[in-house]
Length: 147
Image 1 (cartoon, rainbow, N blue to C red):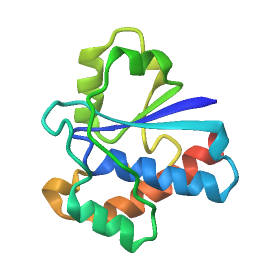
Image 2 (tube, one colour; image 1 turned 90 degrees about the vertical axis):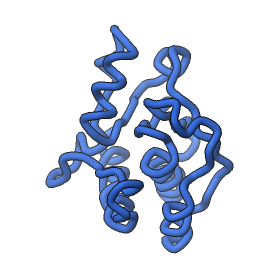
Image 3 (cartoon, rainbow, N blue to C red; image 1 turned 45 degrees about the vertical axis):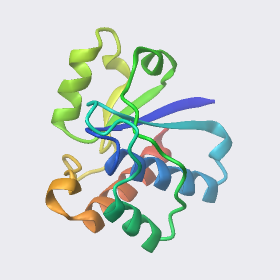
Image 4 (tube, one colour; image 1 turned 90 degrees about the horizontal axis):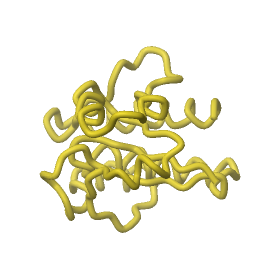
């Protein structure tokens, strides 16, 4: 089983959305037993918090199952067990690089396999939850078509 970690700044919007979308998609395509999906933050600002309510509403509107969630900051043990760490934007990447030395080979922008998307904006600031979920969904489909 491969471990995939989705990472964003606070782990209350983008990374939980990516994980929940991935879990639904993997189940639909019959590959859910191949992957352990984790959710982490690069910062400590939201530790213990659930998914942000506007993101919950957007995921629910799309029929994406919600799972219990309490934001956690990424730790060394997470790097050690991860096969892939998918981050959302440049800020996430540089935060991850400050925390690790030897793990660049498992760090990937979530759009690694998706043309036309550079990074996933933080909807906590922009309010564009629908756009973010659309982009994440495209990226998730492309990730699992390639790994």
